[in-house]
Length: 215
Image 1 (tube, rainbow, N blue to C red):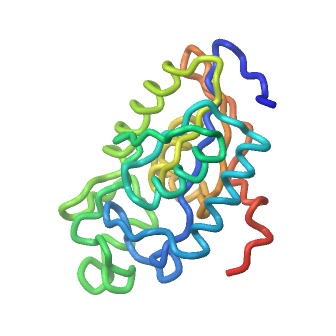
Image 2 (cartoon, one colour; image 1 turned 30 degrees about the vertical axis):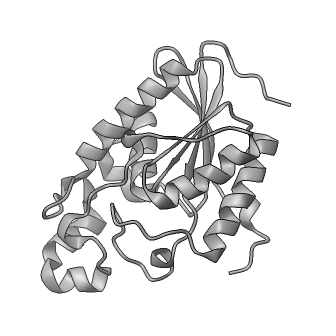
């Protein structure tokens, strides 16, 4: 049974994609596209069941990256829906860092890497994007999706960077709070967006549905 949503609000179920091999060995993924690994596929299915049972949705949007679309496909299938790729949810471009481990980046750009972990809002990745570019993209996408689904609940499947930046935005926080908002693989966040664009947070980084999954 669908949970009632205020007719002037849109309920957003914001999800990070499932695990990939690059999540186990930390790399700057960005717009590189490793697929979900075996655990990631199981996480996606567990998330699909959880969302269907607790936060049922009428539409599913996803980053056009494969790992997000695989996760969204499981969620959409659980609701008898087709997911919709949305460019606003595309992950950050890490430019010259893409595919590298933090240790590899440290040998090339030690000062910039330190800044990334201390002041991420001030970092322009060489050949890539900064958090302000991502924030502009994802907040415009959120506004479009929310306006199109008043009175409904919709799922949005994104990435660690995209989700953190979006959550900072709806909480009224600057991108300097980026590292203060954890986003685990297949974490679920839920918030309502009213007609004025104001958000009410319901759930942040919920991973209780993944507790019984083995590594």
